[in-house]
Length: 143
Picture (cartoon, rainbow, N blue to C red):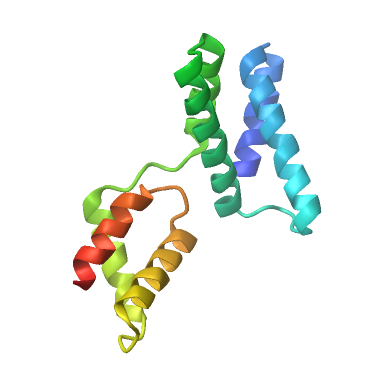
């Protein structure tokens, strides 16, 4: 089941169970996904794109919670996090980065290799690893 399908199913469940906060945030996400699909002409929107959207919303909610931590924001964050993939641990990141580096041409300058590796990693694993941690691992492996 895709993330989009999961969001739709959870929306219907929240609607039936009268979970207002959950229904509202899922309704906002559904609307945003539909808008992006129409603007980009892509239906259905790939899970990687939806993950990026979820990460953006999660970050916004975290920022809002720093200013004003409410039960509503807490529930919204919990709902959004339930659709995000589990974060990768350091060993998994190292393994995937090493695999990506093996596929790249090694005659490139180090900066280009770092950039290409980061780009490939982000394409494959959007939103499942801290980009600063990934960057430091890439630089460590390439040095």
